[in-house]
Length: 389
Image (cartoon, rainbow, N blue to C red; front, side, top):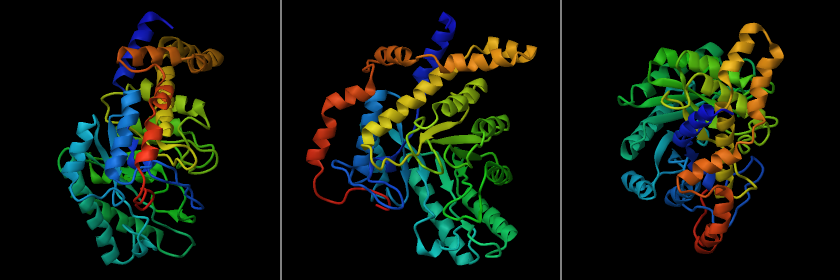
């Protein structure tokens, strides 16, 4: 790597930030079992404290996403102040349309207008939380869909969705964004109402400039070229955020980069190639289910994995790559990418962390700190936070 390329990579990595999900610090799991762990956060305040530990050791995770109603508190200004005291801030506010009996046949797309109004009112509550915490992003994953052909009118559901989204969009203040997520299956299996990036994009373009698409890396069919989707959304300026995780089969929600680190690199390569790593309005977030692994170390490892993939993408020799592409040298072009992917960037990131006064190895530093053992002793009694808490 050239000195200039290395210097540019260090500068970009110094400013990269990754948002953490509050729900990663509670007991979470699969549809079959949630395994409780000692020391897990018992309320949103302790979730913020755990997220602050990740930022303390990585220096790259200064925001925490909240989930409503899981993270409801009596005083959100107090929660935001608590976060600020710990050196972090509140990020996106996530709505929840998948845990209410009224939503069995849909929420924003339900045939009954009263149910749709209830779902819209929930988003008004989320916007109030945004105002109280200083958040600028409302993130909406729509679990609505159908299981059987003929169960409902597909076009009718899209029309109802468009109307509901317009009402949610109208709730936003200037400077707010609506981040619209998609998922090709689950919890419904015949037709999801927002199954893909194209459907999400169409609705966002109809809504206006404050609406952008969320790309969850686990929400695609096997074999999907996710980096192609990243490129297309960047082309039209509508990639608002990532939900980073990893998968083998479906929406596995494993630690990002654990199953296919080359895919994560390819995604970050498109981000870097489009100059969208910083200042382009793309919010990099984690959305993972730490079922068997400890929560804080799992998030530290995730942040490190994203940093490593980003560092490799920043080290791609863009001039050599472009020259090989222009000349039709297929192997040289592919080699320009694989050479960067094969680079051991851990020394580069260690140097970056030490320049910030951090330990070169955040994972090992946290393990030595004794914090995990301390919270296991102190957080006794009460109900540990988890799905639905």
